[in-house]
Image (cartoon, rainbow, N blue to C red; front, side):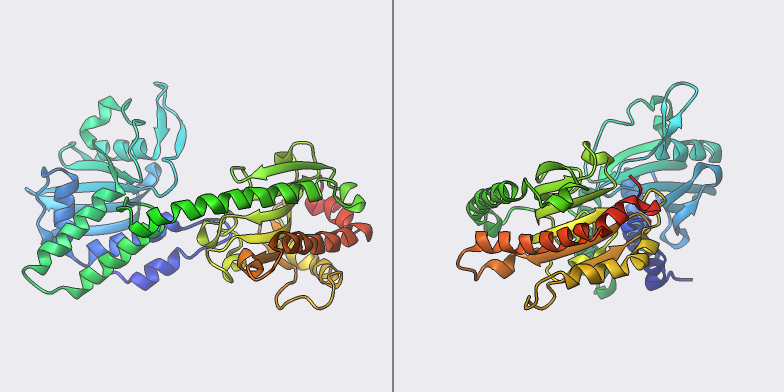
Length: 408
């Protein structure tokens, strides 16, 4: 029975507990190979460097295949060759590493791949059972597995898959028309470009944008300096609760934020409550919070946000409940905002199992028509921070901090 792409993708829809990117991509690739046996046969031959010659009619393709005590593999091929059942395990990595699983008795680091290698060793000879890994860039982390080398085909980059599929589609078009495989491959190529899995040639437009970006970067840093100078002494009621501050210049653990972060403990990383004042350079699906709060980024893909953002990390991981418990606080926050603000200029509350966020934001593009953009940005941030200070003055911010869910 042919696999159903829509059902396969639905299984790996995003949740608050995980980002299903790798699983999602694996299902796309698995569907492609499951529905084009000639392509699957050529792919096996390609990955095994010509040592495998499977019959295209007898190939079975599995995604998220259980290996028993050795875990679960992303993509597995089974086929019979010379009356012997062969297998190929492929691990997919997109922006993540091969997870460590402790140490072997020999002192070797145990990873997902070593589990797959042991599984294949139990199945039979190395020439019939192999393992490969695909990732964005190669590394040398597997060189210490010398005694398992016969089973390990090595690391491949995603460019390898990209070039293989492009060549296959081009060669097939010379002999027959195949709109289905071509269409799926084009969608896969788009996916790979979107997540920077492959290298593509520079364009004239990209090179032409370098000078304007340099000018933008200088303006951005100047604005960040003004924000820091303006808010380094926050309102007194907030200061009583968030008595420490840190400058952020893009490369921080919180995300690509610029401006100032007010936090409740001396070490920001130990704070379960903090406020960011400034703007975020990450946009669209690249934003650090997208996997938890996708609703935030739907309005203005690709545009930096000017924002005042309160973030809470409950110790008991009860943020989703807190979202409902503190709905009245959201109402009070918005009630403290001045009348006459533009459409949508209100605090939003987004909760997950791990976090709670109160966000007052506006895309930077909304300030382009202002005669004095810098002053208007500062004024907008003051509005959000003043509303939050009123919350602190009412004792509600202290209540949030000292509540059992968010106890410091």
